[in-house]
Length: 240
View 1 (cartoon, one colour):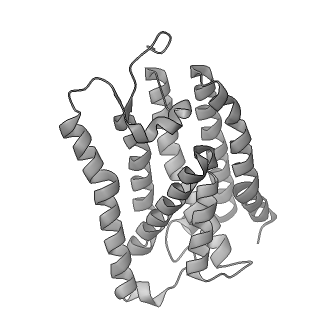
View 2 (cartoon, helix red, strand yellow):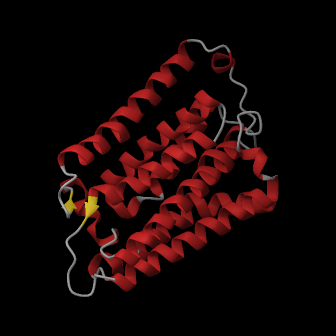
View 3 (spheres, rainbow, N blue to C red):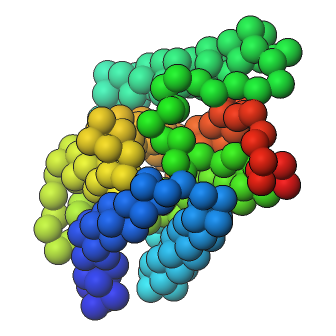
């Protein structure tokens, strides 16, 4: 194992959640356009650097397939009950998480110029309120989808499952999901738990398809869908 692997794991599992928790406290106390833009740009850079370092150490192909991740689960290869169960979970997630909500927005709320979904109110401090913020949020959404999948479902899952711990696939998946949730602790305990569970769904995409790409796409869609659900009424200073 590379020393850089151990450093990345410490940063991902411990430093990043703690840093994010304290870094967003000021934004929560005083949510401003400048503060949100700073947070978006800072997060984009941190995620991109982390993913680039991980890929530099092992090569991006090591993280994109089950074979590259060192995952050889007979139950998945034979398309047995576990594969079908995960497939059902993926289909259900697509319907509940994306298809139905997006359809509701497009049909029920399509004529509304502004929309602020109640369930997103606790995250108001970090959600975009202007056109410039929405553009940067879109960039962050795609960057986070690609980099988090590479770092969590790729690098970190491989680290746990192959070496130095050689954890079983099930345990490795749960630990990776917990770390993924912890990295969103700024959303609160409930938000971190929901995010961790969502991480399990993204892992199911990987295990069913054998590729990290479908999870990246669905992750990006999940992030970008917030722009449909959150269209706040412009106020003075948020029109640009």
